[in-house]
Structures are given as structure tokens and as C-alpha cells.
Amino acid sequence: MSLWSRLRRRRVPAVRRDEGGGGRVRLAMVCFTALFMVIGGRLVYLGLSELPPSAAWRSAQDAVAATRPDILDRNGEILATDIRSVSLFAEPRKVVDADEAVELLSTILPDLGNADTRHKLASKAGFVWLKRELSPSLERPIHDLGLPGVGFLVEKQRFYPGGAVAGHIMGLVNIDNQGIAGVERTIDGRGLSDLHALGFAQTRNLEPVRLSIDLRVQHVVRDELARAMERYRAIAAVGIILDVDTGEVVAMHSLPEVDPNIPSQALEKDRLNRATAGVFEMGSVFKMFTIASALEAGVASMDSTVDASRPISIGRHTIRDFHGKGRVLNIPEVFIYSSNIGTGRLALQLGPTRQQQFFREFGFLGKLKTDIPEVGAPIVPGNWKEIVAVTTSFGHGLSVSPMQTAVAGAALVNGGRYIPPTFFARTRAEADQVTTRVVSEETSAAMRTMFRMNVEKGSGRRAEVKGYRVGGKTGTAEKVVGGRYSKEKNLNSFLAAFPMDNPRYLVLVVVDEPKPDPKTGGGRTAGLNAAPTVSAIIRRAGPLLGVEPRFRDPNAGPLLVSY
Image 1: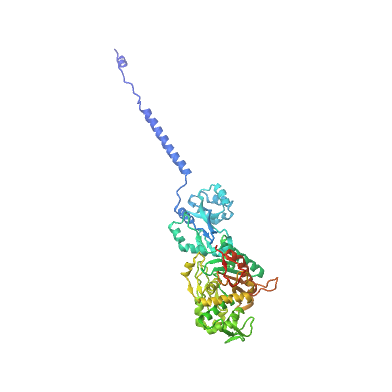
Image 2: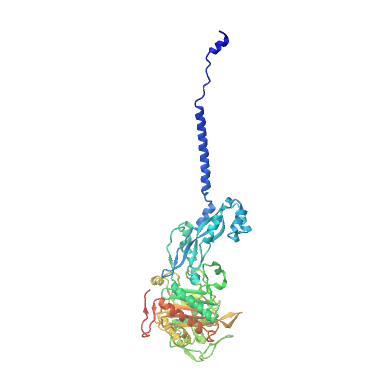
């Protein structure tokens, strides 16, 4: 057999196919497919989810989330509350095209179409504000722009339903909802700011804060002041109502007013809170304090007489009466006829040292202590000489706030107790803990008698309200213009209390630079403008305060209605 034949007949083993190779390929394909699916899914997830907020974003969110408590009047009416608003922010590191973002945003918010906005968006900052407190109507159009790195934060915005009705009392909050004036600032100082700092007042409901203010009476005071300003063409006016037994401020308004919903108004100097922050020479209203001091010191009694037949001369100064009687006056007549000479002679009998001490106890020589920070410092004479004693006895040469005058006046009618004023609810027991006695009950009773006599037959006749037994004192002070007292510009006031046989409330009205009433031709003095304004306020506010008018025996006690 040939070699070839032998080779053909020999079995050559065939090459075996690796039966497991196809499986390994399929396994590799499955693994790669799964890997790509995981990567794709992760990309989709990242594309649909938001990136974790930056530290700057979290800090801003913490700052704007702080809530404030509702503020209520004494009857539960809302004076201030938080409402939802949104603010526009950007995280510049996530902004894709700053120029495009500025261009698109300016189509909705034109004030953002400037170089400053572009600079913010092109920076490397983690967080920047673009616009605070947007209206809801702008939120959706901006959202629909779909700008990367631009978003919204929900904020709490302070809202005052009554607007300017109690503006000077409420004060203001800043853009971050922090109190910066009025009772809003006081609330922060009483612990709210600490709660915010610790993170305990971010979203929880806070207990409402109840004030002593009666919103209904506040409306009355505001309305009557506005009428007086219009009628007498005055440049400003102030109205205050105090509870004489607790020191609670039931109403306080100053015109021109401030609407806390329009914060920029607080920067206008004419809108100063004249009730507590303004200081003025109050004029003849001060005679009541001089007479009370003389009675308390024992240098005079209700039966005493004072020679007002001739002026007082001290050095180059001569003190005269505006409408003098030219005769000897008893103490009630000095009060009723508002005699500068009579009051000045009482001050000289009292002496500068004792007079100064009484004025200190009445709270005139230092800043008023109360619940709002806007308090003016009195302007006090540096050297209390005899001439100073005489001029300050009838309200010249010493400038205090209307609220200081009202609080001291309350002490003259409530039995002689000086009670620091408060804008928060206070009970009689709580008031007794902060009360100091400045005059005796006997002196207070004598002052109440003179208050009532002045309305019955003196300069306060136009303050009378039938059934309410009003008593009070006028004050017409010439204002200093160019270093001299002007006979054309007055600061007029009337301080009253009612019902006089058992006073519950004190009312003070101040009218700044009134002009003669065009209808009657009169109105420059306090008895012709401030006094009738007080009358109008009492007529409307008395029933709201629970004091029922009494038309029966004038010697009987008042009828009081609980409220």
C-alpha cells in the first residue's frame, strides 16, 4: 500500500468547536447592555432630579423661612400677619448663559435688564438674590422661561390689614421679616429674634401678641384728626387715648401717617411719630402740673389767691397774661383763665428746686419709658433759674412729647398715680406693680374739680359732650421761628378726661399750626380747634369704650358697661 493510501486511511482527529464560546459572548453582550442601561438610567435620574442645594441656598432659605406672630388688638382684630410671597434667586455656577438669562428675565422684569444683574449671573457665587417679594402673577411667567440656575424661594411677607390706621404703633419689618420699628421691633427684642436664631420659629405657629389698642377707637381718632387738619388747615395732628387706671394706650395716631405696607414712607421726615418721638413746648397745658405741684407742696390751696393784677418782671423779662383779668385770682381762676402771671407766681413760691423735682417725678426731665423704641428725649433747660421756673410753669422753655404730657396728666386725675404707658394688654394688678405716687388723692381730687370747671365755664367749653362730664385744660403755645416766638404759628392742645367724677380715660389732641376756620373766622387758639376735636372723639369713642352717657342727676356716679 502506498504511502498516500496509508495516510488517507489514517484517521486524523477533527478540530472540535468550543461549544462554550458562544455562551461567553452572549454573557458579555448582556453585561455590557446592563451596564449601559444603568449608566443611562442614572443620567436620566440626574437630569430629572435637582442637585443638592448649596450652603448659600440653605442659608438664604433659613433666613426667609422665619415666621412672626400675628398681632391683635384688644378685641382680637388682626393688626399684622404673615402672608406667602416668593423671591427670585440664582445660583450663578449653574447658569449656562448669563447674557441669555438677563435678556429673558428683562422681558418680564425690566429692572433686571442691566449690567448689575449680568455681573451677578456671570459670577462664581453660590447664591444671589435677583428680586425679593414678587407678586404671584410674575411667578409663573418666570418659571416658564426654564432658565437653569434660576429659581424661587418661598418667603413670609408682613401684611397690615389696617394699613396706616395704626402705622406708627405697629412699626416696620425689613425685607427679611425682622422688626425694625414700633411694636414689631419690641416683639423681636422680647425673644422672637432669639427663637429665629435658634431655628425654633421657622415654620411653627407662634402665639398671637395682643395689644392694648382698640382698633375701633383708633379709627375714630384717626378720622377726627384728619377732619381737624382739613378744617383748620394744620400741618400735623396727634391724638392719644389712655386708660388712666392701667396706663394702656387705647389709641394713638399721628398725622401725617405711615402705612407699614409701604416701608418707604417711614423715611419721609414729615411722617415722624409726633406722639412719642416728637418733642414740643406744650404751652398752657403745663399750668395744670405747676398748680398741682403747688397744692401738693402746700404753698397753695384751693382757697389761696394770687395777685395777677400786674406783670411779673425778672431781669429783662416781663411775663404778661394773654387775656388778663387784671386782678387777684383764686387758684381755680388761675386754672380756668389760664393766667401766666398767676401760674408764674405759684412757681416762684414753689421755688426752682422743688418745681424741678416735681417735673422729674411727672416724667418730664428724662426719656419716656414705654414699649416702642421711637421715643424723643426732652429738651430741658441747663440752668433752672427763677426765670426758667416761671416760663416752664406755663409750658415754655421745656419741650416734651405729647405722650409724656398725657401720662403725667393721667396721674392728676386717677388719684395721683404715675403709670408708665404700655401698648400691650395690662391688668390693673400689673399696673399697680409699676405705679409710683406723684401727688396725693386730695390733690388729684382738686385737679379733677378744676378740670371740670374749665369745661363748664372756661376755655374748654367746646370740649363738652352731653352725658360724659368732660374736664380738661387748653394749651396754646407759640412756636419758635428763627429764634423768636411767632404769633402766627401755634401748637395747640387740649388734655381731657372723662367722666370727671370717676375718670376712666384721658384724651389728648394736638393740632400743629392751625389756621382760622374759614367758616367762622376763628380757630387759632386751642379752645377753638383742639377742644372741639376732643369733643368729637369722646362723642364717638365713649360708647365703644363702654362708658354710657348719663343724662340724669349730675352728682350720681357714671354708668359703666362692660366690654
